[in-house]
Image (tube, rainbow, N blue to C red; front, side, top):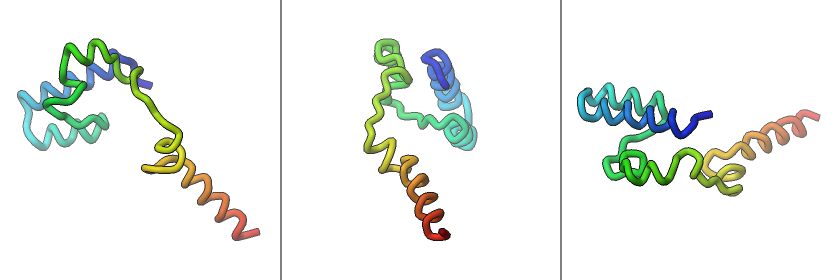
Length: 87
């Protein structure tokens, strides 16, 4: 799991590529890290990110984690239905 320090390190790496790299390099690092650069995003606003302390401030709700937006419940239910179908 990422800590505040590792998350900020990734954000700094992405920002460095934005300032000094190429578009393909930016696309590659964004895909590899799972972070997308947004100039006005929280991760790139230094005073805000020091206060917010991501990823520890992230809030996850049951609806999005379990049943929506690719949550894991859909996979569990799919396996259960597949199993019952073959009994």
